[in-house]
Image (tube, rainbow, N blue to C red; front, side, top):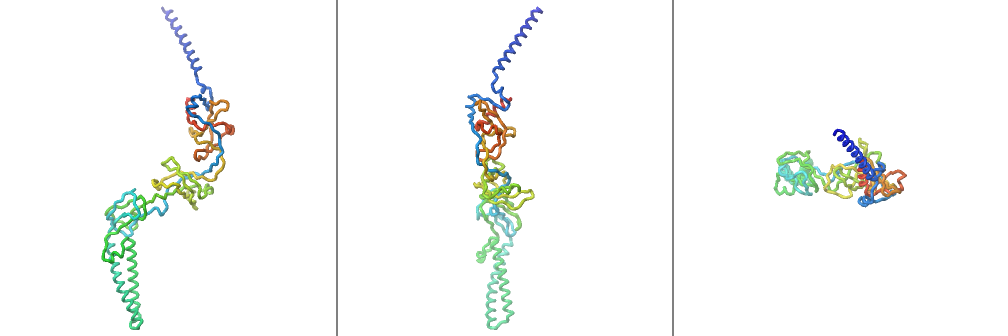
Length: 382
């Protein structure tokens, strides 16, 4: 029984080894062709070519612009940014404003009150009454002086009183207009205890620093209004690149919270270098957008002079692990594609400038299906 059992184990062991060898041989025979290709090559079948929809093309000569990179911030012209302050100190009696609200030109913003407003109107009416009397007195003294009836000193005194009161009257009249009170209305006896402040432009409130009952001074900033209909882009360009810029060049702007590009034109080039060795370049957006907010940061590409460059459709270039690659077709095997590293330049529209090896310049290049080939190549490596 011992020998019989041992003999059975030996037979089973030999049979198992033989079966394992056969499976290894079968597995080896069933390996796909891609396993025999190089690490940067991928071989695809006719079915895969149809599924991926691979399209081939060649390097083209295109007129591409050189570029200057810059960063900046959206801003508004001085006339589109208004700071509201009180012409005279006072207490806030009425306001219904919140930050972010839109206001129209001429809309009521604030109502203020203060005893000084009443006193100023009283002084104006007093000076007006005195002026009327002194005007008559001055005219009478002139007539008497002509007839040598009155002394010249009396005439000079009447003249001085008249012009002094007139100056006070005109000054009070100007102050009343400054705080929004019409002098013609109070001349009828209607004295107001409040003044109203209206919006000088249409825009959005970016600051609201008041509340009802608050006392404010003429130097306090009460409100800030921004008209966003005419935003412009202030780009900071390094001094080494300023010589490349001229007015009218195209600028492609990408906001920090967006992926799409916005177009602008160089409008003004600054004449002062900042401590950071940059120059401000004022750009006007091609399409106005009221949803944009002043202070938004952006990156910009300024297109300078044009020159003929080697270019490929941007779809032909695939980025992997921080490097750029293209797939070149094998002239002798239509199913074999080789991935080669290239250097890319500027991108304009649907094309990107490229620097590729001379040996690949005349070869067919995959312009559609590049990412699918990359996926097949990496799957093969795994």
